[in-house]
Length: 115
Image 1 (cartoon, helix red, strand yellow):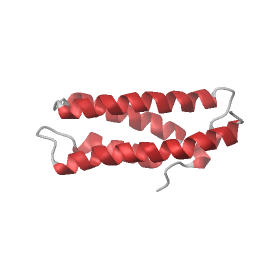
Image 2 (spheres, helix red, strand yellow):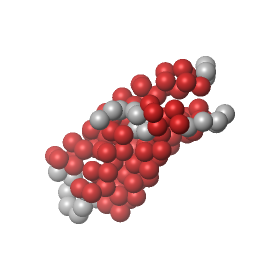
Image 3 (tube, rainbow, N blue to C red):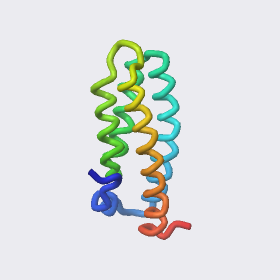
């Protein structure tokens, strides 16, 4: 599975695609903090909602691995304490986001001529 499916990303057209990616990256950064806080507090309704929101945005831009991790979190987080497997999923999500940012930022500049 790819970090980013460039074929999906290339289908996004128009003058605001760079802004869409910027917005996705910023909102996802914020949502990751909210997700971690919700998990720490055992608020699994918020965990599910936030993971689903991130997954939806990730699928739109072709961020397949990030979307898949969010999907797993959405399915696996239920009641109970944050055990090592759940903590591992959260850490994996953060790592995947860092990788995605490293891939997207130069790709965004190349595909849409952003400086």
